[in-house]
Image 1: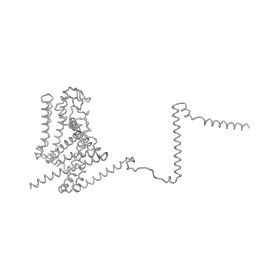
Image 2 (image 1 turned 135 degrees about the vertical axis):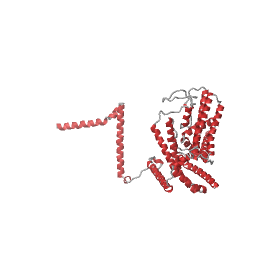
Image 3 (image 1 turned 30 degrees about the vertical axis):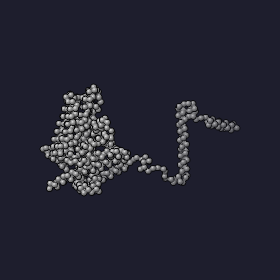
Image 4 (image 1 turned 45 degrees about the vertical axis):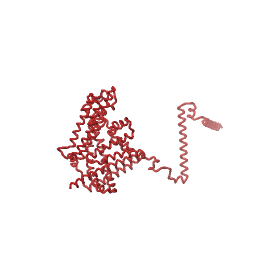
Length: 503
C-alpha cells in the first residue's frame, strides 16, 4: 500500500515539473525580456538555430518529395545560360588565350620554315653595316651629326645674351628662328645633294636633327617663360615652369635657378636626356643600377640582331615579290602581298617599340640618372585613335601638349582646330623623315597621318570598347605595310626607270 502511494506521488511531481517547464520561457527569451544585450544575442542565435532546423527539415522534405516524384527524380535540366553568353557571367578564357598563342606560334613557325626552304638563309650583318659605312673615309651622315653641335651652341649663346639683356626679345626670337630653320633645312639639303648619303644613314641623321629641333624649341620656350616670370619678380616657381629658388635635393644634387642653368653642362645633359621637354631641374634617380643597365644593354643588342635578321629574311623577299603585282595593278595579288607583309611588318614594329621606348630609353635614362621613365602608356588598350597617339609616345605627346596644343588654345583656337594642327605637324615630320632620305616626294606618310583625323572621328563616334580597340589594331597592322609597299614600289620604279634610260 505504501509503495503504491509513493509511486503515485512521484508521478504527480514529474507531471507538475513538465507543466511548469512548458509555461516558463527559454533562457534566451527570459534574458531578452530582461533587456540584457548578451541575452538578446543568445535569443537571436536560438532563433537562427530554429530557422536553420526549419530549413533543414524543409530541404529534407523537398528531397523526399523529389525522390518520390518520378518526374523530378528523372530531371537533369535547370534554367541557365551558355558559357559564351554575356549573361552567364563566365570569364575564364585562359585556355582559349593559350590556344591562340599556340596557333600563332605554329603558323609563324610554318611561315619561317617555308621562307627558309624557298629562299635559304638571307641574313647578312655585313650588308647592314655597309649601309652606314658606305664610304668609310667620308661618312657624310656621321659628319652631319657632328655639325649639329653648332646649332646647340648657337641656341645656348643666344639665351645667354638674352639673359644679360644684350639681345632684345625680338632679336633673340629672330636668331632662334633662323637657327632652327637652318637646323631643319640644312641636313635635308645635304641628303638630297650628296649621292654618297645612303637612305639608312640619311634617315638616321634626319631623325637626330628632328629630335634636336624639338629640344631646342622647348629650350627657347622655357627660358622665355623664366624671363617673363623674373620680370614680375616671382621668386619661387614650380618645377614645371622651371624657375625654382636655390635649394638642395635630398640626394645631394643642387637645384639651379635662371640664369644659372645656361651652362654647357646643363645644355648637353638636356640634349642627351630621353625627353623633348626642357626643365631647369629634372628628377634624378639616386644612383646608377649596374644590373638594370646591363639588362637593357643586352636587350638592345639582342633585338638589334633580331630586327636585322627578320627584315632581311622575311620582309625583303615579300617586298621583292610584290613589285610585279604593283606594276600590273593586280588588285587581288596586291591585297595578298599586303596581308603577307602585314605580319612581319607588325612584328618588327612591336620589336622596335620595345627596343627603342623600353630598352634604349631606359638605358639612357639609367646612365644619366634621369628619373622620369614614363616613355609610353598602355596604348595597347586604346579604344580610340586619339588615345593611341596620346599614349604610345609620351615624350612627343608631352612636347605637343606643352609647346603646341596649349599655346594654340591660349590664342583662341578651338580644340578641334588645335588637334588637327598637331596631326598636321606630325604628318609633316613623318613625311620629312621618309621622303628626304629616299629622295622622292610621294606624300604617302603625310596622307596616312592626316587620315588619322577622320579615322579618329569615326572610331570615337561609332565604335566603343572592344570594337574600338580592334579598329585601332587593324589600322596599325594594315596601315603601316600599305605605306611601306607604296614607298618601296615608287622607289623601285624610279630607280628601275633610271637604269633603263641609262641603257
